[in-house]
Image (cartoon, rainbow over all chains, first blue to last red; front, top):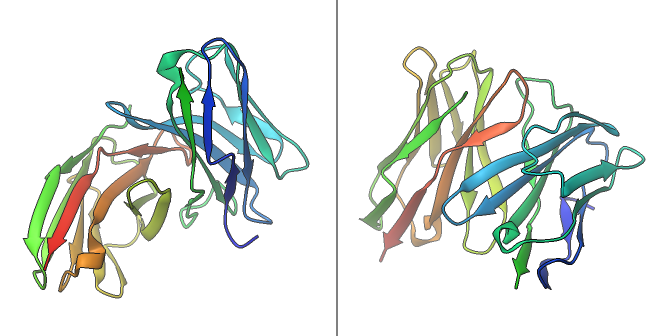
Length: 116
Length: 112
C-alpha cells in the first residue's frame, strides 16, 4: 500500500489475555519502529527493527512485550498477560533506511488497545 | 538521555495569524529533527525533517529552523487556518540511532 497500515484499529481485551498487533510498513522500507502513546506518558519508543533483526529493544517495558518481523516486512507486537496499564495507542512507523540523516519516519494510524 | 520539551503546551489564535511553536532538546548530537502533526484519534503526519547541516526547511506555509548549538528548533506557521488545528510534535533522534524522543506537543487551535 501507499502508507503504513496497522490492524486492528481498536482492540478491547480483558486483563490477563494475550494480544497481537500488526504493522504493515511501506513497501521497501527496511527500518520499522514501534512506539506507544498513553495519557500522561506521551509518545515512547518501544523497539526498532532493521530488516528482520531488532538491534534496539530498549523501550520494551517488560518481558510480557515481544515483537517480531518476518520477511523484512510485516511486524507483530505481542503483549502477554495484558494489564490495565498497557492501555494505550500503539503506533508503528517505517523509514527507508533507519541510518541516514534524511531518514523520515512515516507513521501508521495506530491501534488503540483498551484492557478492561 | 535525550529530553525534548515543547512550549507552549496549548495555543489558541485567530485565523490569519502567524505563529511560532518552540522545541528544545538536551542532547545536541543529533543529525536531524522532525516535526509532526497529529489530529485527534489519528496517527502522526510528518511535516518537516531538518538535517543537522541545515538551518531551515520550508514546506508551503510551514518553516522549521534548527539551532543545534542552543538545542532549539522552531516551527513557524504563516497565515494560520482552522485546518491547522491539531497537536504539533517535535522529535529528536536519541542514542546515536534513529529512534525518536518526542516532546509532549503543542495543541493548536485556530479560530474563525
